Length: 488
Image 1 (cartoon, rainbow, N blue to C red):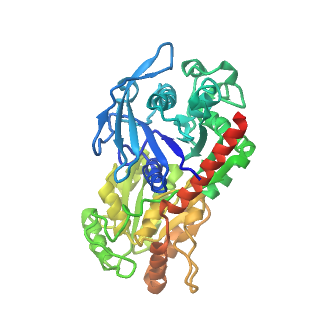
Image 2: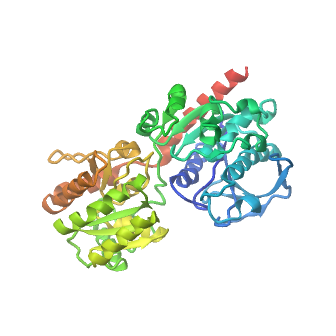
Image 3: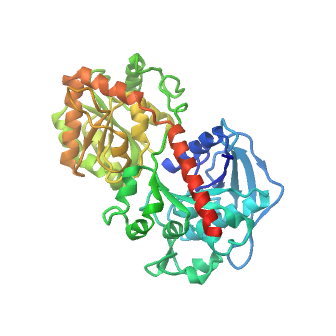
């Protein structure tokens, strides 16, 4: 079968600009697809905080984007994803994107990303490169499928199929109804089975109704979002589109996340020889002012400090854990101010047993993955999650709640039968989390062979993008076929 032309339209892409796991996926999956022989390209805004990795050049032609009362103009910069022949285009438009934040709570967010949707399609026309599939990522590019199904349907770009990936259904891109005019969409689309929701435009809903096919980042999350409890108001839409929705697990860049070669670590190690992991633990304890105690388990956290990630449960549970168990905590993240302060207070009350770093620190994040003994991820909801995959790759069994992609990637420890890769608990309560951490702690101290088995099995898992890339190719071809039938 012939290679496909695939455009990734995205608000973020690693290593240029990253907020979360979406950037990791868009930075890795195109490389795997290109290695399979497909022509893959990426388009993303140029923010004030974008890192200019590699060689960049400005395209000679300005890009005229048809939004609002008059055409807006952008400069296009071209580079490539590191280590691959995947062109990446960045849209420079200072009015919308020069600010450092990707999302934040800007009142013009909907206009910014409506611009991105139209600009991505206009760029394809300017390049004279019409993709077979446009892979759209989250609400920020939810208007791409609508544009292709309406005002652009009769142009060559209108032949493109769309695959819309839901990374986090909670964020949907609500806007005032006037966005319809700004995006130059037909007002006939402002209805409940298209763009409209509660009298406003919902950009996520627009993508879900209009995309050729839908994916999300784990099979369990694909089931959860079709329920009232997990659908954030869009479960009726997802049940309606259920035949076109598939959950495909995210992968990781196995070459980058490799404890045998990671340049961010003070020592390297493998599943066959974990000696270097002890060196990493000592370095972590030193950096976060933890007691230099090699025999005390360190529980690591790298996360946004928000309720969705269950970090309020950890803040509530920590005093009891620290009062009853011989453990240490190494935390890195930022988010809700009361949670940041709760963890700082724990560090003050338990000096040498709780260490905290705030903000984003990629090197410290990797050191926590490698230097911790157990990784803690008590999420209330988790579409896929990547940090638990990194933890297992680095020989750090995770404690996770049974939700979303955590269920799909972490096998519960079964004592005495040499099975499992981590510790899974059910209820989103501080008590359940405390019990799970106690279980991990007891395993570490009382059953060292069982704990070593957890480490070996976790490190043996294949979480590379290779398998998932093949599944995406199947979905792309499925979408192309469906689009051709619809056009015919």
